[in-house]
Length: 439
Image (cartoon, rainbow, N blue to C red; front, top):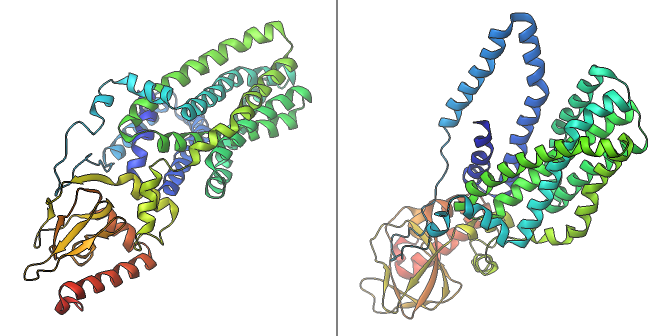
């Protein structure tokens, strides 16, 4: 059952945050909680087992799972209805339903078709393979290479978990200041070189430090890879992609654990550690340049340019603009079509991509043209009033619609955007209805 949890969590996370930076922070938090549990969970279990016996030792985690389930039931992801635009006729079938209908094969297909995604997943699988090998090698290092007995195994396992916990700090710092792919590659290198160094110069203090670095690398890899996958995968396929990956990762962990005894049979412990440690750097560095494409915005650059051309959105941070661009809904109008009428309730903001709209108001014969790059609809959304004019297509028009709540949240959260929107509203109200200019 726990195997189902990770894909669901990873797929839901993007719908619970407001922008790419917050997504990274949320992933850092989730992985930090997991690392904390891996360190203190066994200790708590041991104390309960020693003090109260087996029954309570099993009851406590059962109760913890139940409380966690109750907490998860309160989570309400924001599910966007694809193609829902109140003022336009939408054509069915454009929501990816055919793609999502292929079940798990859609998740595999999403990975196979994207070359950059294939490279990311391939390296992630290589890291998981080494993780499976390290499960065996940690025991071998403590018992055979360093002769530290069972307690040495416990110490080395613990420092790896502590390293994962400590890794939350550089993971958060690097994700804010560097490319996510750079963070990912650094994490892979920390998974590789420290293991090789233990084989080159074996000592107990060095092994402790090196495995702590491996733990830090594990957090860097998980945070960056999960975030990159969430950003690069279509929303409707997130659950399937992460579900497929979870199965692949389990297989690679098993493969790494099974292959390690074979390597130890044909080579020395030191040679096995060196070969295992160098695998990730050898496969990572040649494809580093390819991964950099994943740091680019995952939406059409034209949408971003269109938003940047609107004075209301121009001052917003890049991350917010990218998030808004991803949420834009295309709308097509034929010449003469009415998008909305004066007095209608407003629930969308619109940007003209191509063509010309006419702004008409009752009692005025003059129609004001609005061409490509111009936006409208902010008055009803910000002032909370009905539409103040009728919008009609003068030519065939391509538009992008933005949900009212997304528009208001983005604009009201940035002082310059708010001031710009207020100035535009005042100017347009004055042109259409001077008496409302100060309303």
